[in-house]
Image 1 (cartoon, rainbow, N blue to C red):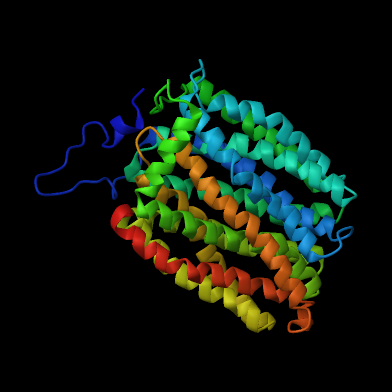
Image 2 (cartoon, rainbow, N blue to C red; image 1 turned 180 degrees about the vertical axis):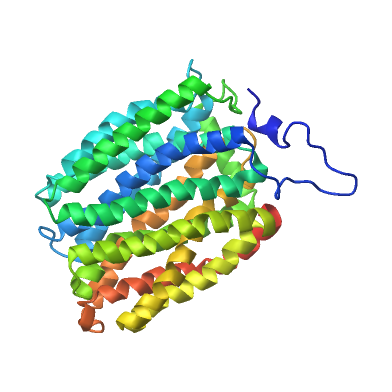
Amino acid sequence: MATAADRKRPPGRQADAGHDDDGRDRRLEPAEWRALTILGLPTFALALAITTVTTYLPVIASGFAASTVVIGVLIGGEGLLALALPITVGTWSDRLHTRIGGRLPFVLGATPPLVLALAVLGFAGSILTAAVVVALFFVAYYIAYEPYRALYPDMVDDEIAARAQSTQALFRGAATCLALVGGGLLLAIAQPVPFLVAAAITALSMVVFARTLLRRGVPDQERADRDETPRATMRALRDAIAEAPALKAYLVANALWELSLGALKTFVVLYITRGLGFSMESASLIIGLGALVVLAGSPVSGKLADRMGRARVMHLALWIYGIGLLVPLVTQSTLVLALAIPLVAFGGGVIMTLPYALLIPLMPKGRNGALSGFYSLSRGIGTALGPALAGVAISLGKEPFASTQGYAAMWAVCAVAILASIPLVRRLRDDVD
């Protein structure tokens, strides 16, 4: 099977004289659709799992945690693990040689503990139990996720990278929607139910993915030097980042995007239920409607990005999203919030779709796994800071935002992070588009 480097132009297609036929407007071939569908299954499984944890564990923890700061630190612990684990695992997957490739062994090995930890979290009754089990969950999550994500540049041409990411975002959006709507409804039945159901669906999806990929044939991958030590690999990656201003800009920008998303996911249910006074069932439906808009925005943003440029589309979406996030900060009017939800959700769909597609053109050859780890390193910075900063903002905002018990203050954290990333995206245009 051809490597990613050998598949930059579809077989039989040649550039016309004087015309750069980069494939942005061509239709996806059946084999490409099948590859994207296969790759989407782990996204669905892992998104369902992590959305259930980051959205509904805070609701459970609010019954035994001392404050929103403690809840923020509990969920933000994901980011601390992401500061080291993903880049190590991703680099290892670049060098590992097995009969089933370098990526799949990590996915297969991490799935059982991930599923077990997800199921057990529903029975957590203390902050210590929740902290230990959620740490195990996040360790397994990153061991599986980074090698899996590195399969995208192994299997997908760069010319359809944005559409590949929009397809991935569709799977992520569907799983997020299912977790947000179904999780809230199931939580109303009993505390463990949404976690047990999510664990079962995650296990099934990962098994189907592994069996299908093995039948299809594990893709070739561009490998780092087999004799290169992990320390040397990390040093080479560090040097590549130091010599690439675009990677530095991306590191900070992606951290800010994840900071905003992390703050939002952690406290949005509590904002709606405790801040605005809606029931859990109503909160699930409200969030579900927003998730549907996110789902609709994913394919649109991917197609626009392939045609107009990834950085250009992201730049515009950040303005829309950042301004939309300010609306719940200044008003609790049901009508105004209802009008703002589609705006915020569509911008959020773009933010969830394009970040990895922006990184793919910046990847040094043979470092797909390591740069996927770099991606999660940047995510980890934001994921660690977002919930914690939002928790502090809510605690400090109880008097200024008394009508929502302080929960409206989280929107300030979300909006500032998004708007602060806009100048960084401008720096990426020449290297990405």
